[in-house]
Length: 441
Image 1 (cartoon, rainbow, N blue to C red):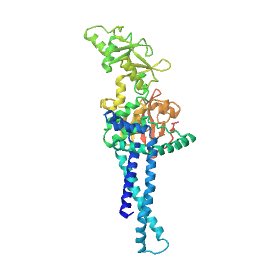
Image 2 (cartoon, one colour):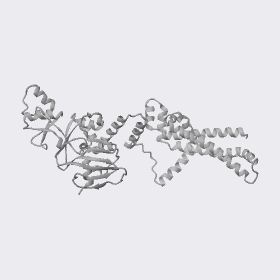
Image 3 (cartoon, rainbow, N blue to C red):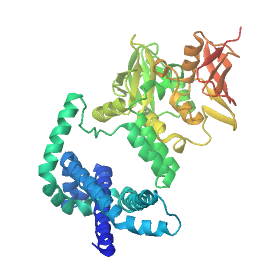
Image 4 (cartoon, helix red, strand yellow):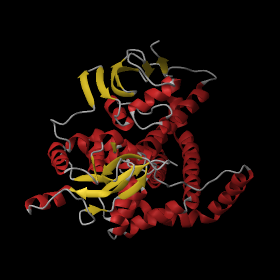
């Protein structure tokens, strides 16, 4: 054959190999979510791609048959077509026993480079840019190619399956989407500007509802405002004026003897109707939802939805009240500072770029967000920053006790009746991997 004919055949082989490489990466990289959207929009080709991904053994066998056959044939034709011309060119500068070998090496290098560039590298990079669009575009011709190669592909697949079974290799693809996958997509969207910073923060907090327990967002026992059955009218009016809550617990004598709760608007109605507040009775006391402190916020949302309540009492395993929680508390957990008034007390106060004053009752998840810490040690053993200090110190903390972890120093600043009120958190230049406790003697 002439040089032109050889070049023409090699170009055709490169185009064929490039098509197979393009198709292989596109079909492997096409995301099922986008393909399902296209299929639901009425594109039958997208459904064909999904079916092929589910049963991809025949395609990959046919693809490898085509790619290897084209590469071998291209090498044979290329070497025979170009070597004589390279030998003639070399004879002008060198005459010796190595002329043929040099000509072979140059022709081999040229053909291999052409195949790598135009049949492998460029098609695969193009396929990675828009795998779903390319997969949908090439699905019909590739199915014809699979049918042509099916007899040989069947034999190759049978041998491959036998070897997989022999070495106990699981070939079933796991398409389950984890939180880590979704988080990675959200991070990519935030970096690309598709998600705004606050939107990214909201979505992360929504997923955290599955992991955060009720105590991380509740009003703790010592901060719960409640009425007793013998509460005086003056005391009721004073509490209504002092605390801007919409619901108040009603207890028999102490907080652990919960009877129900009363809505502030019911008391307001009695005041407007000039009725006495001295007696809290069944007409005003409502049945309160009682939940264990082991529930997650996501499970509590389901309870609120099924009972149509927005207020619940949290009890521990000893049937003692540990706090109360409302639907608004969950919304604040999700929305954060966007629903908290600026003038409200903040649990985390940033002093400068490297130090923070943080209340001991701050939920550990809020602290992790503020300090950009991914994981705390033994998180399952505590809910708050005070709990973290007690677990690490293995004692009731005192002022000046400190723990070093994750490049931060957590130092107790104020303790009130064994309760950690406030800590000073300082960023360190060096970041120890293990927590270090330094109790003050």
